[in-house]
Length: 135
Image (cartoon, rainbow, N blue to C red; front, side, top):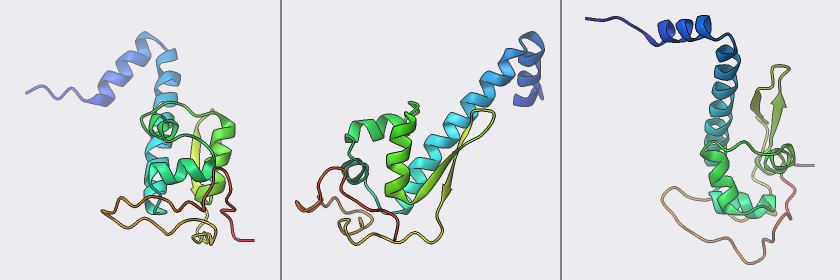
């Protein structure tokens, strides 16, 4: 049986093309960001639609980010404000999510989504109007 492993393949690719290592690091960072964002959104009780509404963006934009499209820094700032987190950009260009452990559901947001429910946001919530961090 052949014991050729992923690490072997990566080592061969780097030996053949040294720029492969930087490309791989960028790809790993992007995947970590999108998975981390989706997990944080869900753990905070947001649907994609609710997050988009509160951040003042469209729901398809949230879906594209969660599928791997790189967001702009301004979009990251909007999402961070609503989700109660910081997006830290490292020297190597990678972005990581640092959730605020003291974050609480803001009073000016609609009620938290319940698992399995598909409730719509109340009409009182308008685009971009939210203060996600307790004052």
